[in-house]
Length: 322
Image 1 (cartoon, rainbow, N blue to C red):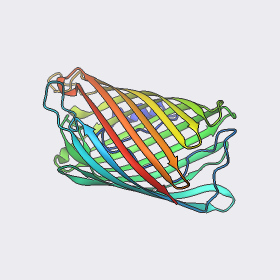
Image 2 (cartoon, one colour; image 1 turned 180 degrees about the horizontal axis):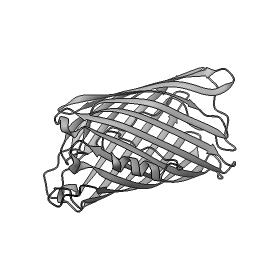
Image 3 (cartoon, rainbow, N blue to C red; image 1 turned 30 degrees about the vertical axis):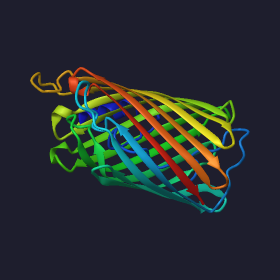
Image 4 (cartoon, helix red, strand yellow; image 1 turned 90 degrees about the vertical axis):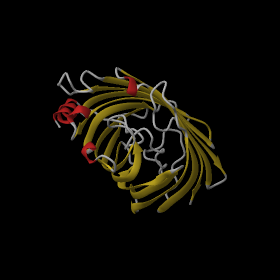
């Protein structure tokens, strides 16, 4: 726990950006929310002020090197399918305060399905905005502890605060806490906490917006050999070339230092470095249909052979909004 506390104190004045796949890198992409999280860019049309909004999504999944096998080891690819849904209701007639619920059900080839449910409240006003949520995940594939496959149940608290300092600059703040338990190995139970900060430039209007962020955190595991501190930096680009197309590209670099002090421990002096590219694309067709694409590529390097691997994931889906 001391690793988590020291990391959080170091970032107490900063904001952060969340990472997808709370239970591990093998998780399916999080469902897209039924309404935008932040106020529109200057020059963008005002969002439709519906009292109630909802959406459902069906998608196919492909995981390359699903088990994150290290270099030289046999790789296994897995197909899957996902059903996602979300709804939001405006809580005040004349204020952008909303309550929302979202969830997903993911089926994997030759494996048991996983589920997720989130409840939250958010405000999209200017200059201040916020989003607070509770998220539950059940049976999420994960290889985060001991470099071995397991299924994680996760309880997560997430909070975000944004401040529109000027029309062109937005400061975003984030915090996250997760408690994870595992089906196959009860001694993998752990707590994860992180805080960080991001700056987003909106001076190009609604067509293009870059964002740069940093996050620090740590993981405290019942097995002390798996305790670690983590540093993460990312660059995200958002681009809308037309009213019907929305694209994002993110590069994230993450470093992990294991904190076990016993020279005889397996992770003594271990350090992992992971670079990840994520591309998303939304193509709106008509008033209510949106085609979705999600692609991720990750390259992991480590001072331990089992931490060196490459993996990819592709998701194609169709969203209906109403």
